[in-house]
Amino acid sequence: MDSSESEDNQEEFCDTKVNKSDEGGNVNENDEECLSFKDLGVVDTLCEACATLQWKKPTKIQLEAIPLALQGRDVIGLAETGSGKTAAFAIPILQALLENPQRYFALILTPTRELAYQISEQFEALGSSIGVKCAVIVGGMDMMSQALTLAKKPHIIIATPGRLVDHLENTKGFNLKALKFLVMDEADRILNMEFEFEVDKILKVIPRERRTFLFSATMTKKVQKLQRASLRDPVKVEVSTKYQTVEQLQQFYLFIPIRFKDVYLVHIVNELVGNSMMIFCATCNGTMKIALMLRNLGYTAIPLNGQMSQNKRLSALTKFKAKNRSLLVSTDVASRGLDIPHVDIVINFDIPTHSKDYIHRVGRTARAGRSGKAITFVTQYDIELYQRIEQLIGKKLPLYETHDEEVLSLEERVAEAKRTATEQLKDMMESKSSKRKKHGQSLKDDSFDNDTETFLGVRKKFFGKPNKHKKFKKKK
Image (cartoon, rainbow, N blue to C red; front, side):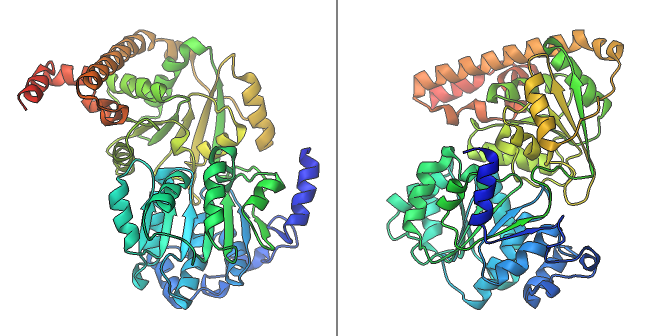
């Protein structure tokens, strides 16, 4: 099925299409300024909660989605990153919960663990005055303690699909037969092949008579995928063109030979020092290497990737959010949904292989009306991928100005830091491998998870050789 055909089918599948850029939208541009949450039909208790969170007026997606959701419609919401999509589904759910209090009331499915914790924080903040209980059910955490949390019957469950299926199959007494709301946040990822098996299992055990919301910055075109979510008479709400980045975001590209990528990265980090940055890499190993290299040069960098244990991932995010670290070096595990207000700059060290991921990555900055900057490194091997991104966002990006002499003057220092980082990573992997042989430890329990301060090479530098630790363990 070609894209134009699937678009036509989707139009038929969605009963109404509300587009803010069309005249047919529910809300006139002139009225936008004067509308408050109360005008949208939100009850006083939740309006007060919004005021406490300093949400003065609804965002565009909230203006469109909340009234429709309060009318009892299923909603497909499409809006750029950082536009307040979480509140667009959280407010109607909490209002329905106020009218009809019930345990296991709503299920929110997310593709990443970090996003699940963030959504939980928003629900708890909005529902603090009405005593809303939330449970976050994600992989990498203890199943037994999660089962105890579920036994307390929370109102809202925020989960990743895999771990939720584990509990549905193995936790006695837990079922979602009375569920009233299903939300798929970052719905295009949830409905993708990656989660197909788990999502099908979940849809089989929840009631067909329920309300369903799908929200994302990039939505799948394929009607079959949307129909899998069992939507009933849905309304599609678009408040932007299909794949749009926010106006406050300055986007640049930098065309460089692959062998000088590290040098250019250090130059930009040095040039923009004092700003909070997210650096996206293609591999877990890449995040560790870059974080170590930057640390060896004196920058406060911290890695975040899928091979770290959940506690370490949360710890890395917390340190970055608290501004204890100024550079977060991450894989795409941090590209979706995470709201870290103080991110000033996003650097695509490795260009994303899927063009849609570009929208999500650069959406980590310039959120909620703030300004931000995104710089994408393009090597001689990335030209086709870069052209796809320009085609997707419908604009040509300007070149980021650099002076080659200034950049290349750092080459020697960067090469030394990179060499040291490679040795540190090698030492760490060898140490991990020998520990696993001795104690049968799994990959996830070892120092691979640690912040780079505790990596072997840096530990040697500051604390001497780590033999003492080994002796202590033998005595034990």
